[in-house]
Picture (tube, rainbow, N blue to C red):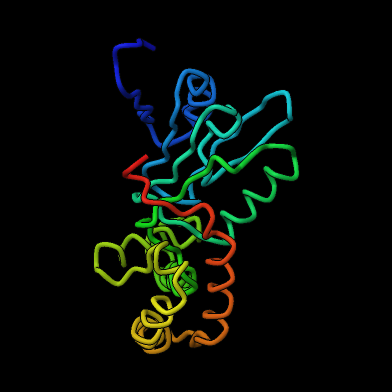
Length: 210
């Protein structure tokens, strides 16, 4: 790693399991910022250090360097429960997560993404693609289709409520009429995701300025 290069990019050249997490963990000691820029909780990396063995899916591997700011960028789709569980696990094991920053423009994996991921896979039958079932694909579909919920919406209840009032009926029609599934409950989703937003608010930032 050279000192005259402003950024170092780690890219897997295969289909995963190339050891990217280990490389990032090693290089992070020389970096002030580590950023996860794409994918979702369908991906994962394993880190083994003096604190033990850690399986991470959303938090960047550089979290173990106390001098590194760890960014979850706007190209990542985030299941808020998964992120909160990961942060709690790290805190419980003595890792400081106050250096984590989540892009306010990152898109959220919503319950309809999980439902559609599962129902679509079942409809495909023998042609199923073997999805991880994390809602990552449907979340990216909504991102490009301009139907997504972003992190900034999650931490602003009025914005979340406005989006739910439009998007949920739309998604429930797809779930019930196309896939024959059960409709999702809007009040339950609102209460659950407003609480996620409350807990994640301290981590959310305009990461383009960091």
